[in-house]
Amino acid sequence: MNIVIIEDEYLMADELESLILEYSSDHAIQAKLTTVDEAIEYLKHNPMPDLFFSDIQLPDGLSFEIFQEVNCKVPIVFCTAYDEYALEAFKVNGIDYILKPFDNTTITETLQKVDRMIKSNSHDTQDFNSIIAELSGVPKKNVKKNILIFKGEKIIPVNTLQIALIHLDSSVTYIYTFDGEKYPTDQSLDTLESSLNSDFYRINRQFLVNRNAINHVSKYFARKLLVETQVDIPEDIVVSKAKASDFLKWLQD
Image 1: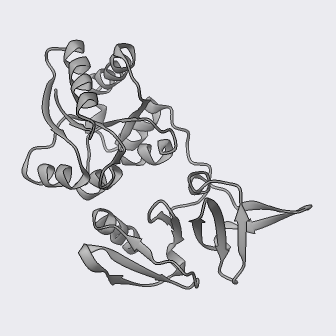
Image 2: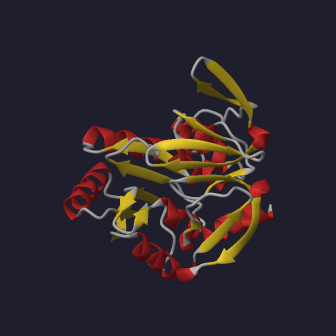
């Protein structure tokens, strides 16, 4: 099995390589990459590996941008010191999410999971995403009709169809509705994302946007996109160049 490691800490990458090869001499490390841009460039000019081991927070962005840009169809094991990205990891073919520091037992269990998937030929089926969900144990998305907002002694049900966008601003999450209301909530952006349907897109770490709230999209510098919405907010909504093609596909569909 050919494996690519994406990790900006060289000692961590070397340790991971050692543990993988210790598990099986049939495995080969195809490349060790350190940044989003380096990984995208490498994958544009080299064959796709059978498996990725990838950190999430890299010097020039999040590794999710890599797998959206290259349209990754192979399984990914995310290795990170943070647990806040678990939900997003399983949206890009993540089959496992292991926290640093990891050890021989952790890597062995992960590779055994990969072996089970490959032996069943599941990665060649059209139902690949459901196989990943089953192997990873990620729950089925529970779309809600209303988001509850607690305001003093009041509980306000906000219909999700009325939500134009959600903005994380200075550690506070705000829900903006089409009728001009703005509600602070103690729910995280990840939690809210898991409660909403496919009409919502996670632009970046700060914005979730309803496609029906988008007026137009403009080309921005460095191949990024600028999103103009019906909601008047002081901050630009920018789609990274790595995410631009995926975003436009979502907007079209």
